[in-house]
Length: 233
Ligand code: TMP
Ligand code: ASP
Image (cartoon, rainbow, N blue to C red; front, side, top):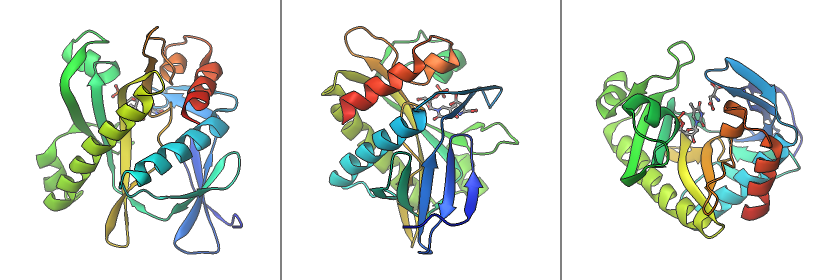
């Protein structure tokens, strides 16, 4: 599959057209940003790790009957994906308190939640991705009620599947962010699932093996991504 015109460049990925109108090439960069892009850097080999990790996780989810945009991995940093129209929602699932939830609600990081917590952020750079609820989503017309029910159901199921998958590899899935897209009247899981978009802690040592190492200047960032890759392959 040949890479054609660049269609979109985001903070961590680039999308290219292909000769097939329904398919795109998703290219993973080494660039990293945090805190609404106030902090910028490069994590060498991140693109390669995230492409492989995402590909593996999309396959696991497909096997568990979660439809995704993933078609196949093409090379070190590229995957072929279905050309979805991204729904402007960041769906966050949390199993353990960390990051934004710890700050917002004054809870200690590391506290286990008695049930998974789902949050929505409205994807808008101008508004800095504000936290919104179901009613906001419906009033803004982002999706219809039935679609929101489906997104919610898929997100809880994805959490179950990924928690088990990571758990078997001695990784605690603390929280993660999902994006969905529309493709031929269906809703598919899109974007990526990687240490950029998940918090993953070693089960025994509680060592952080995700982008928090970059956000918080903890060192050994590249090594953390490589460790996750090693465990998921
Ligand atoms: P948060 O605690 O900062 O809200 O992050 C929750 C999860 O979502 C965490 O695993 C990191 C991920 N995330 C993204 O993928 N993109 C983002 O822009 C943010 C803020 C978080
Ligand atoms: N990727 C986000 C940004 O650059 C934030 C994050 O993942 O922490 O704003």
